[in-house]
Amino acid sequence: MAFEQESALANAQKQFDIAADKLQLDPGLRRILRVPQRELTVTFPVKMDDGRIETFVGHRVHHNITRGPAKGGIRYHPGVTLDDVRALSMWMTWKCATVSIPYGGAKGAVVVDPRALSPGELERLTRRYTSEISILIGPDRDIPAPDIGTNAQIMAWIMDTYSMHSGHTVPAVVTGKPINIGGSYGRQEATARGLSYVLREAAEVLSFPIAGARIAVQGFGNVGGTCARLLEEMGATIVAVSDSKGGIYRRSGLPLAAVAEHKARSGTVADFPEADRVTNAELLELPCDILVPAALHTQITARNADRIRARIIGEAANGPTTPEADSILYDRGIFVIPDILAGAGGVTVSYFEWVQGLQEFFWTEREVNAQLERVMASAFQQVLRTAHEQRVHMRTAAYLLAVSKVAESTRIRGIYP
Image 1: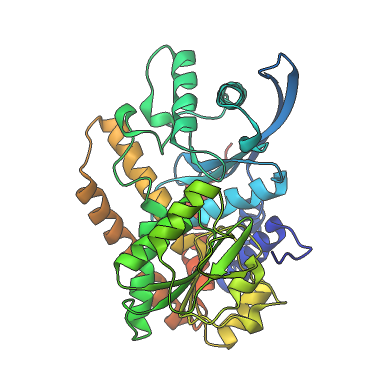
Image 2: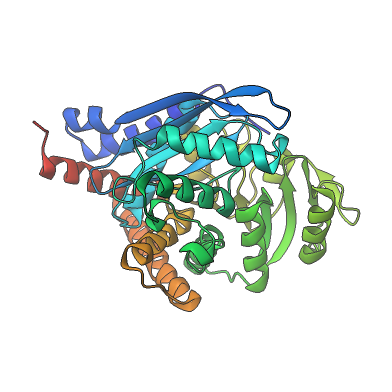
């Protein structure tokens, strides 16, 4: 995969600075919003199955909580850094503001490869990490959710651990839980479904139908794989997909169900026999109508942006495109739907789940998806109007809206004491 020297945090701050400059943001507000508000790093022991004690490092970062409780996923990944978590927490602040969800931004992580742990080790690690960050989390303070390397079961362990410490069941402390302990219908597909809605809106703006569009998806996990399936259901042709071990391409279109079955059986799409092999970097440059980066950050850079051949890029991953690449893509007429809009379906339905948990009144999947479509379509049109009015690309337009909302909330609330 293509990486640049600068960190995700440096890119996140550059994206903020572009909007702050255009907004002529007050220097004091700029200093507040450019860095995280609160950071917790913990080192904690876990007893392994063979009796050894291993120590792990975990983080939980709050970027800003002016507009509501902190909200953000927990990532289990061997290569995650504190700077990554800082950047991800900042992106969550802007993501929530872009779709007008009353949350601030947070993110958490444990430096671990969850695939190397047994189920018992994974549970013990999760419960101990939860106890370490319990001084920050809570249904009215900070609500974690799944991210790379975590899932509904891990959210259930976090909820149970927090509930045991509280002495009563607290469903609203996490989102992305299993349905039968307070999860929401539609949450599993929410990020991908939200992206499919804004891709449909973008295709209409560019006057070409999703039906028949050729799609390449980098990252065939929960979000990328689900997005590919939803777009196929809308009539699109999926020509390329990839995962961490590599990708596959077939100009006439991939048999998606067979690819998914192959990945479930073998653990990767890379050796699917009925397609050409490509690298993750090569996939980004394939001829297609829509490119969906759904893997890791810093994939589209100044080094490869001039070779991207898609008409639309829908960013399912956080921070896949650098600021330098943004300028190149904009000049080339490529329509980029930025991560803080394109990937906001997950936090939107997380908000719905949180509300349902607090009210103890649950919605049908149809109601969830209808509300998600309303939020995503409305946010897309608002960002598009701003882009046209300010004559900027969609990312800067989204940042102008998000940063101005958070800055105004901070100004109105004032500085304590």
